[in-house]
Amino acid sequence: MNLLRKLDQNIERWLLLVFYVMLVMTMAVEVLRREVFSYSSIWGEEIVRYSFIYLAWVGAAVAVKERAHIRIDVIMHYLGPRPKALLYIFGDIVMFAVAIIALYWSWEAVHVSAKFGSVTDGLRVSKVWALMAVPAGFALMMLRLVQSFIRDVRYLRDGKPVYEGDKLFD
Image (cartoon, rainbow, N blue to C red; front, side):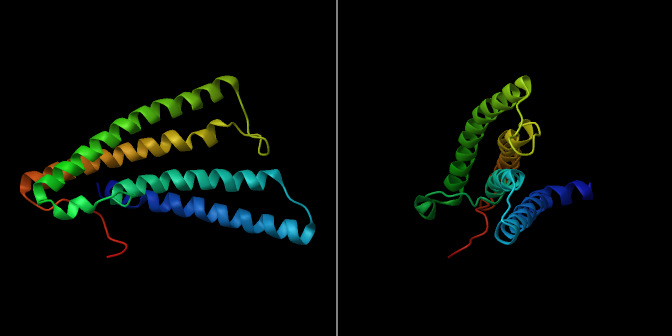
């Protein structure tokens, strides 16, 4: 149980770290190769591109988990705890519905790519690995939305103030 809790708390951090290090290291090597040796590779550019895509989708799931996604919340300052919780729950339900639709359509692109065996231009690996970033990101977002929904309903039931995420700026 403790391992699952640690994974739940840190899996996105580790994924973000892996993709960020891969992006920076590959970009540094490619800049060095280009500037010093006057040679560049197509695979380096692909690794950077796909690392950035995965970084963005995992980051989107983190934003959902921490309620750090961009929103206009001026009205939230004028609401009491119960209406605020209900509004957050409603927002999570709407976002979950959008995520289901997006997951379906993004999975369709992965399926078509797998069906026809498309590969990336430089690495020559199945494009499924690149395209999986979108459905994986939406699936992770859906998991975090379910957790958020359960937490908000529990807080509403117990009379606690709704979780609003950590503030970057006050």
